[in-house]
Amino acid sequence: MIYMRRKRLTNRNGIHTPSSETTTYVNYSPVSEVLEVEFTGGKVYHYLHVKPEVWEDLRTTIRAGGSSGTFVNRQIKPFYDDVRLEL
Image 1 (cartoon, one colour):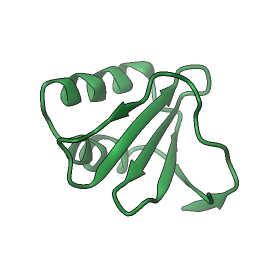
Image 2: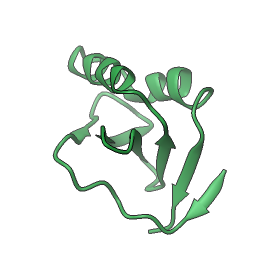
Image 3: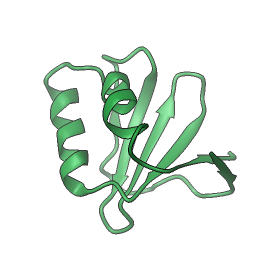
Image 4: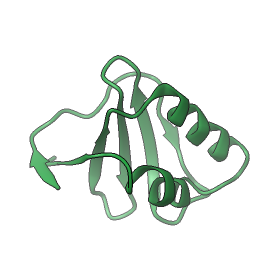
């Protein structure tokens, strides 16, 4: 894990995640292929090189009432490098 001073994503793709006990907000930049995840404890991570299809799968999961935390733990963390933001 890397700690970096990076800015939060500012595009309008973000989704609040009330169905999850571990995440509060997710966002995605298709230009940089960065998935931003804010966890309930306030920590924010950027996951790198996440393809748009994976973001769409996460959005579909959230819209269907599924847990974004479970999705992140199973489909993101094992496969993508991450950077913890220093806010």
